[in-house]
Image (cartoon, rainbow, N blue to C red):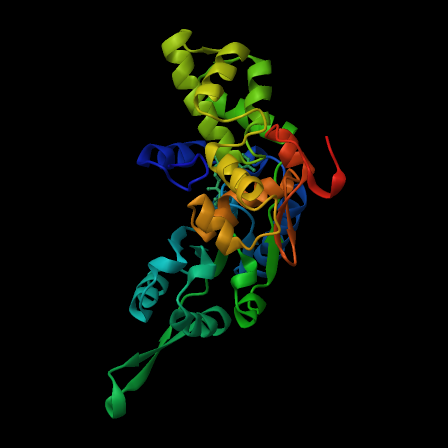
Length: 336
Ligand code: ADP
């Protein structure tokens, strides 16, 4: 089943993401500390006439990593080239990307934790000395060729910083963690998007969409768009509280933003493993989900809500999760 959390469900979602992407710092809501720190790095680099240090951004999908990288390029007056770890399969792919950059450009490398290990070796000298040492040929006839690269800024993005090797992590001059957004920031984002998409929306409807957006801008924008479709068919395009609630209900997004995928995981944890502790592998198998999907898409929000806790013995469902699902909590003698 597709989820509102997927990076791109359909091409139209990709178009939506890019059409609503803030094009200046003022429109980039929240994450104040990160914005401030990055702006200092950029100003200092400009004053020195250099390109900024390589930056590593980590945080869940949809929290604004790509958008930040684009703002960095914009601020520096340079181009951005966007690619991802798994997309670079051979050293030749990397060479093609790097040699096509202009002096000072930004290279955005999404899902950097999924970069092939062999490519990682080539990235180090590229990051440090703006050189690429390619090996031509095989066996005794092999020789190396050194390519000089333009100075560039690598912005790596990841949902799983723990999977990066230490040498790679150490080569970034700044590392920033993007957090979940405050509800009032999500409301601002919805209001801005509604204006850009020319949607008439009541303030109470903004609130209810924000409450169900998993504190995540991408989810907020996607919910807004689906609510708009509903309003167009049922209410001449005007998004009232009633319409928003109806639309969200028919999308199976509950009042705390949980989707059927989240519920499935919680139910597996509670019904099949008596609330845990259970290892990720067993949980994934019984919920019929990929381990990575649980780790990247569902679990961070469930942990943020305090529904799931990670213990050394495995995942445990909290009392809050039982109460959300209206299941009686019978563990250790605590009854609701
Ligand atoms: P990530 O790269 O972390 O997956 P993106 O940068 O692609 O996330 O952001 C997803 C969408 O959410 C963007 O299209 C943008 O419209 C919106 N968005 C993200 N962060 C913000 C923000 N701070 N302010 C306003 N909109 C945002």
